[in-house]
Length: 127
Image (cartoon, rainbow, N blue to C red; front, side):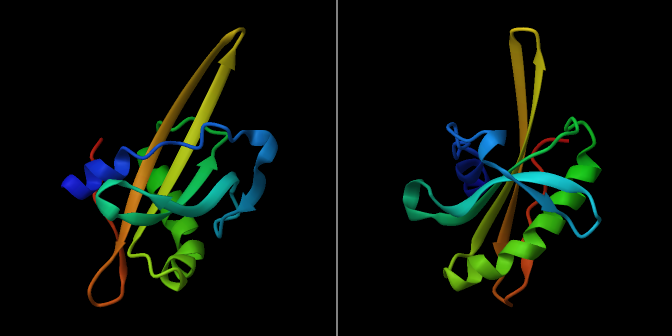
């Protein structure tokens, strides 16, 4: 599980905002904001394709988030393979603003390419 902890420790794109994102339609017809997608370099030499998204809805429905992460990854696993990456991370962020207080929450999903070539999502560490 060191791999999961290492990947979860990756940093969110701090300079990214909704202003630099594009609306991304999921196969389920729901839309999320794609903030960035590209290689991420982690300690111990592990590299991954990292897809950062921002959701309009709160992140309290983990089953919905898993479905959305799976939908997002179906569009990006080919990019990971072309870059010879065996790990993919989909991070979903939600920000609530109330007056002068901003509260941000995020949830990440890690995918890895198995020896047989299929991609699999690792189990969540949080319920």
